[in-house]
Amino acid sequence: MESARVLGQNHITKHFENAIKMGKISHAYIINGEEGTGKMRLAVSFAKALQCVENNPEFYADNDLQFDFGMEDSNKVVTGRACGECKSCKQTDSKNQPDIKYVTYEKSGIGVDEIREQINDDIDIKPYSSRYKIYIVDDSEKMTVQAQNALLKTIEEPPEYAIIILLTTNADMFLPTILSRCVLLNMRPVKEEIIKNQLMSQYNVSNYEANVAAVFSGGNPGKAIKLATSEDFKELKQHVTGMLGALERAGMDIISNYVKEAASFKKQIEEYFSLMRIWFRDVLLYKAIKDIDSLIFQDDYKLIEEMSGKIDYSGLNKILKAIDVSQNRIKSNVNFDVTMEVLFLTIKERIKK
Image 1 (cartoon, rainbow, N blue to C red):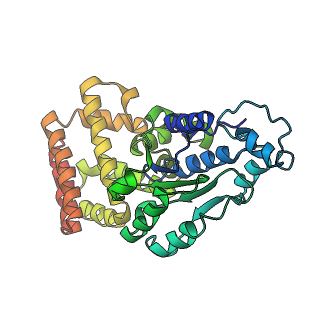
Image 2 (image 1 turned 90 degrees about the vertical axis):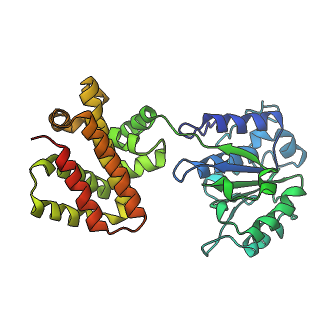
Image 3 (image 1 turned 180 degrees about the vertical axis):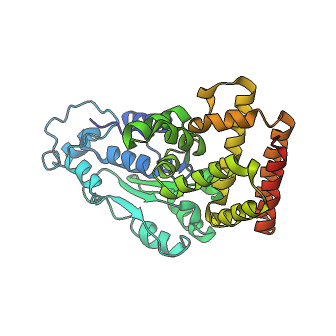
């Protein structure tokens, strides 16, 4: 019996399992969370469990389908979990379950035509071989207002077998009338330690790299995995830490080179500033409590220890403020080279030789 857990989202998994066990299935759900948090996996796991033979013994028995779908005992207790072995479960795994539909789109948004053709015009056709007919709409925040209004009519008066699951990174993009008719389930940030352990055990990431990626991810496991396994991120991290370690002794010619190197990371500029912010957070923390284990950049603790003795608390606060100001200036399209040069000089001036 499968228990399809998504890291840190047990509250949603349990909600789905209990809904199936109690027979209280909503016709419409919204799973809301950042990209990389596991929304699609949760939706597919729910759909898989909904269609599983062992969660629908009476339906398959009444329709003489129990042997075709691999269920010989119609008296099994409903667990709310997919068995993983029946025909329906195997079809779901291979994305061939005829009654689980994935809404697709080709343009930048989901228009009214996609909703009408893939949901509204199809939903009145009864399920081919399952108890439910399930529609999963990824990136559903991209639905136009017209598309949402078209979907609303279906959500208001759905066939008894129909279930629509909307996956989104921003539930605020939905019309209030859509929100009021759906069960809203919010993904939760995952604790850094849990993400770190996953990276080390499943992806063979070092303790140091896992620590940095976990903190940097903001509780998003997918983002942490991408960062921990990304050569681009490793290159960026090496540049930032190397630059900060050498900035104290750098002349204007070297600082000009750092500005040019920073420009090559423009597509990762948010990560650039975040790495700087985490670095000086480590310096501030070490200055306050002298605890290496509490540092994110533990491999660079000697440099952090040295820097913590050269920058006072006022200087650290001014550096952190300067990082925030520089980031906002870049967002406002202020000249990149000038902004970064001023930031590097500000940091250099706060380090006492």
